[in-house]
Image 1 (cartoon, rainbow, N blue to C red):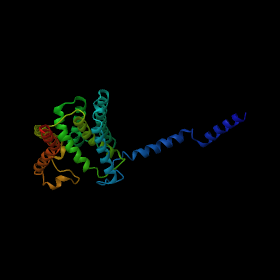
Image 2 (image 1 turned 90 degrees about the horizontal axis):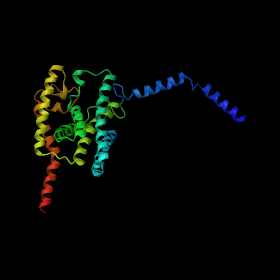
Image 3 (image 1 turned 180 degrees about the vertical axis):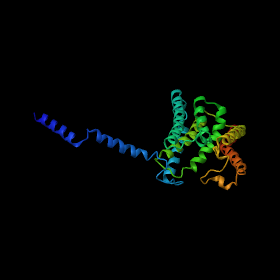
Length: 279
């Protein structure tokens, strides 16, 4: 009898507190929604600071991830682990791109003249996802140089001035760009793909052909994809390369230099392998 009275008392206390009422839970859900909404709002609350602790930790986490891929490259060649990693990362990249378009739509900022996946980062992301599934060497020649080159530059000097962790735009930016780098590093360390000097020129040719197509699309869409029709509004490296269209010439040289810099470790390894083989 005593337990029954106590149980009844607890039910009365809970009922009197209002925890079971619809109004209480509506308030909880609303406050939770408002709390999450701040991470998806159009204008971020905190300004991104280049090489801040947050930025450094983000870069360090991706470096650590790549080191782990190298250290466990043999284990990652196991059939089911290999397939799971490749498909999982490919799906992550696709979801990352889809989520960006959802966010732009959510904040009413999606426009055909600047929101299509035509920027080099977007096309490299999509092609890297295809690369992970197909393991195509021809795709690798493009994504390794054009994709990794642009992604590394973006991660080191990101153009996200009003967003920092944990805002969606910050998280998306580094997952998408970092995912491109990780995908291609995986293909190098685990799958054993290696670019050649010829690959540098092929990637440069493919990139310029794609740039010509994007230039025509910019004309018809009145857009500025890849920033080849005019300089971006925010300050960037292009501000130091002269007015349009003259900045495109040094930009080509910087691109080619970046490609050769990415090829340098493979060239040095070839020299080392030859010397070691002769000895």
